[in-house]
Image (cartoon, rainbow, N blue to C red; front, top):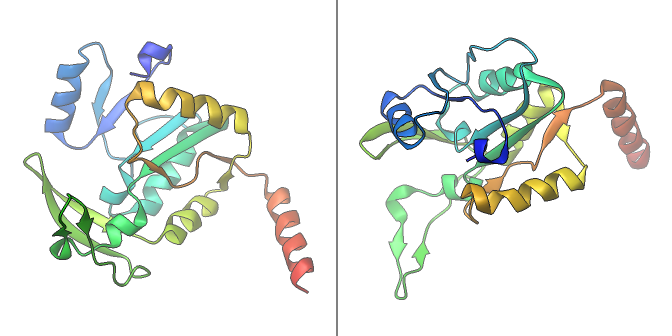
Length: 196
């Protein structure tokens, strides 16, 4: 899909059936067996890194985010689409279908990370629930911060429907870009001054 927009892309996944499916749908695509926690690319290789519904399936999220940050070129962007944290906090055994098709779920212990084994398309995988703060702390630890350049975000939001990204996608933080440490110090100093 991104190639149709003129972008050169490389897709990775550690699951061979998913790679086979991607190759069948896009025989001209570049798909490689790899893990997000150990990306087989040189430092500063990409202008854009996309994590599409992957962080919930990765045991070592911190290593994966560190690798994503490592392969970003200076000024590059990391786009994360992840399941909504309230969805992952729901106990899968408490889903109740209501009249009219709505589903009621019970959310308990949102602040406690956990992992559950699930099956999807014949593949068994561990899904992790992590509060949003855990993702943001991991991103900030890598020197990444929300990017306020709205024109870039707006153009990608316009592109999203053509890429098949529907309303179920929740962006953890629209875009993340390298953060100048002096800006963070200044920002934290301003907040501390406002509090003091």
